[in-house]
Length: 143
Image 1: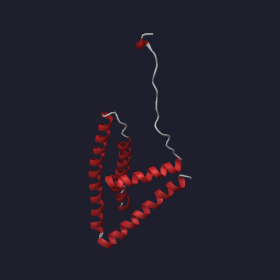
Image 2 (image 1 turned 120 degrees about the vertical axis):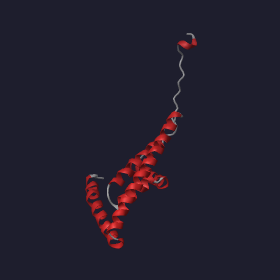
Image 3 (image 1 turned 90 degrees about the vertical axis):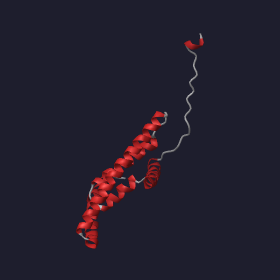
Image 4 (image 1 turned 30 degrees about the vertical axis):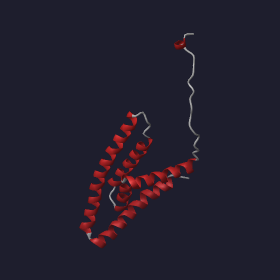
């Protein structure tokens, strides 16, 4: 699968769709309410991104202190970062996508879908637990 056509389509298609949607919403509810809606979603999204980002950071720190690998917190952090970046772009669709990555319930659903796509795309097969046997005779045993 080639990535460049997808990126070109994304960078051309999404802004056109956003402008069309903003014009339609503006025609339906008015210009000022539409601008207010875009500003409101940006402000609320920014606050939610900050809150969720700090929550994810504390969760990762807590897991590290217990000696665990914070893989779930790292994927949550990546999702929160992507959600925050989507909220920086003006428009209603990108705000909706960004908010869905910030909200924990919908973020879980997105993470499951992405994990399934990655497993199918890259043919990842679980290999079971890895056991490392560390038994050696050394100076401690009194050779």
